[in-house]
Amino acid sequence: MKLTTLITTGLITLWSSMLLAQNARFTTSGTVEYEKTVNMFAMLKKRINKDNESYLQPAYDQYRRSQPQFKKLTSTLTFNDSKTLYTPNPDNGPQNFWGSGMVPQNNTVAADLNAGTSVTQKKVYEETFLVRDSLRKIKWKITDETREIAGFACRRANAIVMDSIYVVAFYTDQIAVSGGPESFTGLPGMILGVALPHENISWFATKVTDVPVPPNKLAPPTKGKPLDNKGLRATLEKAMDDWGEYAKDEYKAYML
Image (cartoon, rainbow, N blue to C red; front, side, top):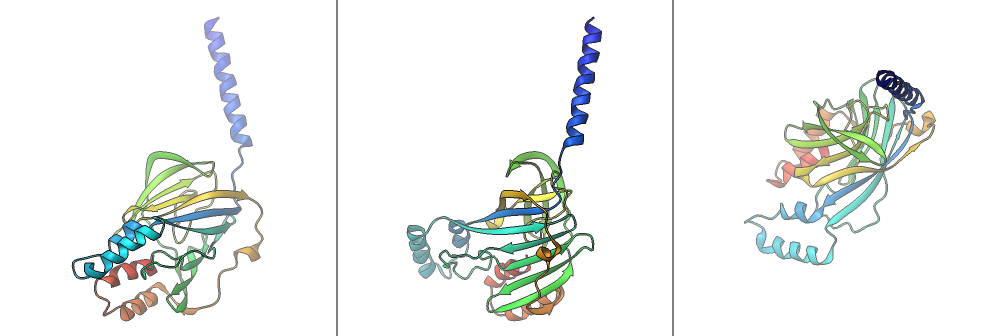
C-alpha cells in the first residue's frame, strides 16, 4: 500500500512539473530598465595621491560634505529575440565628476546578436563617434551562486575584460536573449546585473516589461564619426598621450 502511494505521489509530482514547464513563459522581447550606481566617494578618493593631495584632499572633503555618496543614473534596454538597443536616459543631476569618464553614460549601443556585431554611439568629451565592430568576446565563468533581480531568478558569472577589469554579472535564462547593459553580452540569457567591484560601478535591472517590440524601435544610432574599435583606441591614445597617470582611467572609461 505504501509503495502504491509513493508511486502515485511521484507520478503526480512529475506530471505537475511537466505541466509547469509546458506553461512556462520565456520572454523574448520587451524592455529592461537599469539603474547605474557609482560610489563617488570611493572613486574620487582614488584620484588623490602625494602629488595632488594638497589641493585635491580639501576638495574631496568638501565633496563628501555636500554631495551624496552614490550617483544614480538610469537607462533602458529594448530587445527582441536577436537584437538589443541600450539607451541612457538624460541625467539632470549634479555634474561634478572631477572629470571622470567612468561616471556619465557615454554609450548608446545597438547589438545584433545573430550577426555578432554592434554599433555604438560614443560621446567622448566634445566629440561623438560611431563605432562599428564585432561584439566584445567575453570569457565568462558561470558559477552556482544565484539571486533574484527584478523578479527573475539569476545566476552569477565572472569575467575579466580589457585585460584588467573584473566583472561580476547576473543573468536569467527566463529571458532567452543573450544581451545586457552597455557592451556586456554572451551569456545564456539576459544580463540583469553587472558589477565592476574595483571600479565602484554597477548596473542592476529595476523593471522588466514583456511586450512586442517593432523593428524600428531597435534601429541603431547613425550619427557620429565612423570608426572601429582599433581606430577609437588609436584616437584615444593620441589624445591622451601627455595625460600621465590620468590617461589609464580615462582610456578605460571610453573603451569599456
